[in-house]
Image 1: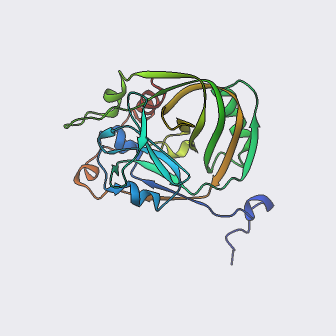
Image 2: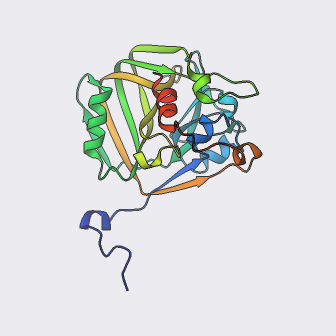
Length: 252
């Protein structure tokens, strides 16, 4: 009989399993499924760190140290209500596996390479947290939508972008494998909030002056799919899925 770890390397054989929880799918958001069942209170029961959005696309979400923040389209931030609901969110209980100082004045492309160098394999999921000072950071935040909902590429095409200069804060999110395209956002998907919890949003680009990056390995992904008619009828595998993800996440 073959044991489950018979062919594992000495490194992978001793990995401690760590769960990442996700409600709904990114491809559902792309199809305009902006209303979910899960409340913020229920989500916080699944993890103390993460990101997502709110029903009706009413702003971006970031969760740090067990507190959920709602970032609005004007760049403002407020504590999220516990009974607010989310159509898409990803959370975990962040445990730092490795921490590294960020080289001074690193661009997004530089830090992407740094994160890759700190990971065990591109085939796992990682929570990432950047803490420190930013020379500048450019964000955008989804604006609350009214029914009937349009596809996400239409709602994000003309969104306002904001640039904050010489600001300290936290970028948090996930580095997701390419094979999860449509389930989540492939690559590094991060949201930002400043130390005062007054400004933030979905990160488009940045230059980090100084700080640290922490990485938390995720080996287990638990999905909770909405029990709604809209989700059941959604087109979750559009032919142009990759292009729509690029347009909504990078704002090109």
